[in-house]
Image (cartoon, rainbow, N blue to C red; front, side):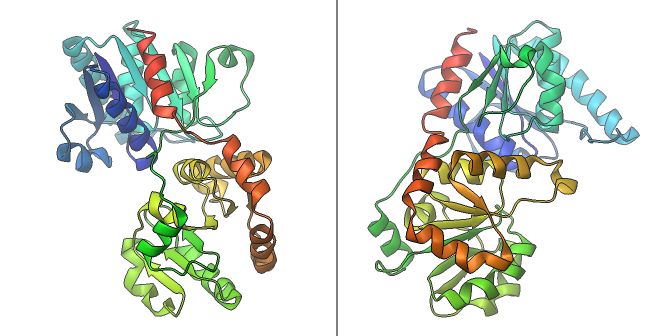
Length: 339
C-alpha cells in the first residue's frame, strides 16, 4: 500500500491526486492523508479515494506560533497511529504543511519516503523532510547541494494530460479562428493585481482576450467585458490553453506546468517574495531560462505581446523543454521501486 500526503492548497493536492489515480490504474492500494483545514477536506469526500484528515500546524517561514505547534504535535500523533494501522510500504509527500506530519512519521518509522517539490525552490516542509527521504522528485531543475542532488530526479509536475485541436477549442469557447487569443490567469482564485492592471493595457491591442478573474471577482469586473474581451470566474485550463496563443499569468507551479504541457508561451508576473518566500520568482526565472517565458513588464507590455506573437516558435520550444508529460507515471514508477 502507498500512502500519499500533502495538500492545504491545490498546488500540493492535485499532483498527489494524479499519482493516486495512476497507482490505482496499476492495481495498487492507496490511501490519502490530508489536513482538516486544507482544500482536500472539501474535495476528497467527493472522490472514492480512501482518506483521513488530521490536524496539521502551518509551518511558518519565520516562527512557529504556539497554536500551530500544538496542531502540528496533534498531527504527528495522529499520523503515528494511522501509519501503525495502515502499514504503508511507501509514502509520497507533495509538501506543504499538510504533507509534513505523515512523511515525518514515515521517516521515523523507516518507511521509504518520496518527496515531490512543485516549485523551482524547495519549500520549508520539503527542506525539513529531505535529509531522511529516500528520493526527491523535482518539477523543474533546482540547484541542490551534493547530498540532495544524489537522491533527486526531475520528474515534472503531474497535470491533466488533455489537449484539444486549436480550432475545436476556439470554437467551443466562441473565439475567432483568425486572430491570436490571449489568456489571462491569476491562479484558481484570480489575482486582484492582474485584474486591475492588465485590462487597460491589453484592450488597446485589439486582440481577443479570455480573462479568468476568479469566482469571487466576477461581478466586480463584469464591466470590463467588451467585444473580444471576455471575463470568466473560472476556466477549464486544458481547453483554454489549447485555444490560446499567449498566457499572461502569475508564476504558480501548476499553471506553468500546464502551460509547458501545452507549449504555450507566457508572460509572467510572479508574486512578491514577501508573500510566498520567492517560490514564484524562482519558477518564473526557471521558465525564462528554458526560453518559454518572459517576465512581464507593464510599461512594455504591448511590445512584449506583439514580439512573442510574431515569433512564438522559440518560446513554444522552450516550454516543451519543461513539459511535464508523463510525470504521474514517472512518480508512480519511482514509488513502485520501493514496494
